[in-house]
Image (cartoon, rainbow, N blue to C red; front, side, top):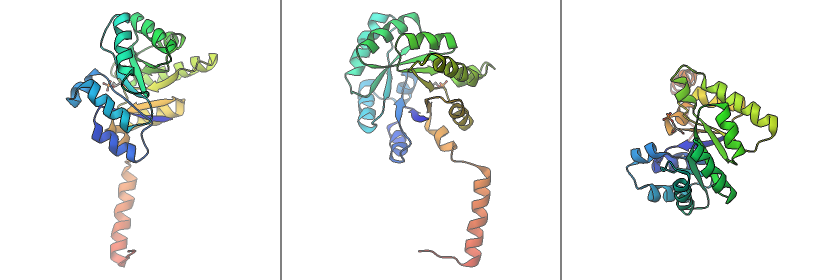
Length: 217
Ligand code: G3P
């Protein structure tokens, strides 16, 4: 499973990228707002940093305007994936932009039917939002499994990009189901390294090393 980082925080992306943890980046208007940066400027900086796809989201609601914004975003760098919402206009924009050879990430997906339409419209990525479904007591992971089954039934090449990931468990569950990509905030990727037994075991090793006077360098 590829790891995308769901942030526009350049410092956080750099740290994870240096560790080889970053296969791509996803942003959205809320994350751009949080960064306090200009969308074109910060997106360009991220694209220079990361080799993989960098999703940049349109803000228009009508397909023609989305297409114009998508083309402008795609000019930033070759690794831009234009992010469009899963509305009828978004699907139209997806079809036009993907026919032009651009990567398109269709976002705000909450049902298997929506994912089916995005694949038919030529989406490179479909972004089902796990956490926001969980918030409503609907099992977000079930949606990932349903989309996996449907895409595999028909050989759709659209990649399942598990999004709205809130916990480290979401990452391993998405990987077990076979999501192609998971995009997670930096704190979730950090949390994947934590285990209480690792901390406990390390405390004991540190104590024993000290008691025994072990020195290596
Ligand atoms: O990738 C989509 C993501 O940014 C949404 O996450 O936590 O706002 O539902 P969240």
